[in-house]
Length: 127
Image (cartoon, rainbow, N blue to C red):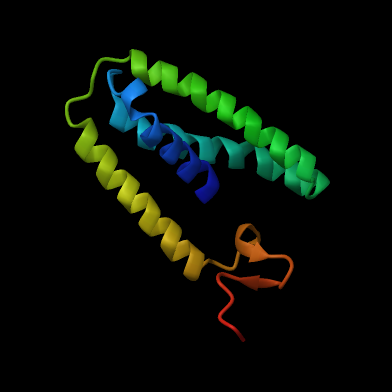
């Protein structure tokens, strides 16, 4: 989840000059990767439960989600410019990283957060 969100954010911040003239640029920086995470999990989880972990499928599905994100970005850019998009998106991006930080160090005991190599949750504290 952090990979989808951070890679999209970093990519677009590096190409800021190219996209800056578009409508809803800052709002798109939050909405598109957030929806990408939701779309990835909605499709990936049922397939994971049916067939288990397959690296090829995971990578393929991630590429499909990136294509969907590009389509969503174009839809958001075509919309009328949102008044407080910068403030709302910056607050939402910071909140998202706070949630990522909390879930990294204090994850719920759920199959999404287990490290299958060490059979632990969260960051290994050297136990």
